[in-house]
Image (cartoon, rainbow, N blue to C red; front, side, top):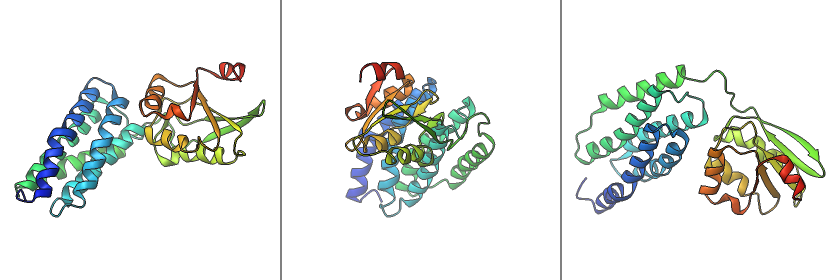
Length: 241
């Protein structure tokens, strides 16, 4: 496989671009910056999964990366508790992606080790779920001074089932009307969720308030503040209108 120019170009990008990004994300995880670390890891892993899915002979790497990505999303969404053991397992799985790539390149695949890691991930996913956090808790909607306030109930908003109720609430408002997302009960708000909300910012006047430092960092880091106005709390929002 190593004689294929496409393969060589891919591995060049892996070494020069994706691997350094992944190492940065893993350092964040080890430093207990779980949410930020996962945000950094998500992009290169998603790319590796997609590219290897179209490379002849590297489909197993795409499959393995997909499993690791799923586990990463579950930890990110709070479906699996971010315990030291699970973070270590996640780091091991991410590192193994690069081992699998090299093994496929050299035609020397260790399937036993892959199965061991995937087995541990399956066990962690089924037994490591949090009991205190709900998934898909939805939203409540109220009207104040002609502003539709969407109070988000999920503590972590990353998956489609978590941000879809927000989009549905927005769609129930007349185009051009003002909308305020109250995130006072939200701990983390993922980039995909922010992107979905921001995509509606050209049709609706969307603002948000009561953001945690993590949720705010993700919003600003991805540039979504260009379509979503940010306020510290409800009172500040209404006094500035």
